[in-house]
Image 1 (cartoon, one colour):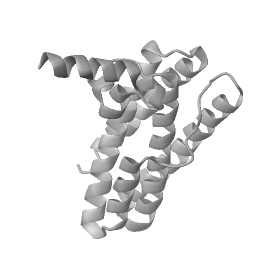
Image 2 (image 1 turned 45 degrees about the vertical axis):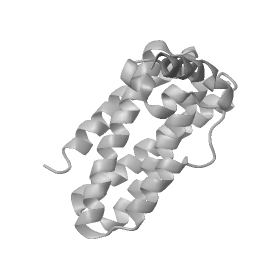
Image 3 (image 1 turned 180 degrees about the vertical axis):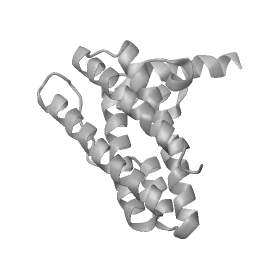
Image 4 (image 1 turned 180 degrees about the horizontal axis):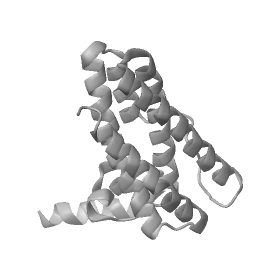
Length: 175
């Protein structure tokens, strides 16, 4: 067991060389309340926005009226945060790259959504929205509290209340 712990610690310490920290990728940072690196924050926030926009575009076509209204708000709000994040990175104040596409886990969620219809689609979309917004709230809270880049840290703190409101709205979709 001790050997495993030492290996795990070693991986956590060397992981930044691989682009995304193991702790962020596995959710360990979230559980421990550790702030993500700037590169991880930008990557996770951008991929979250991509998923929110693309899944909500699908929901705006396939769901009931209440879900469509929620989806349209998610599209507008997440396009805004995506544009703000891109502008901050492009300004040169943040040294990080915006990913061009979603990672495999978000892509898998999209493929599953695309395969569903009717009530099954709507339930999965609702569940995904709750999960995605819980992840986003955690990510933004942790970066706003202890992030490395002051401009990005401020933006995370300013964006957080909207994400918390989105989470509340997503949790109320099934009520």
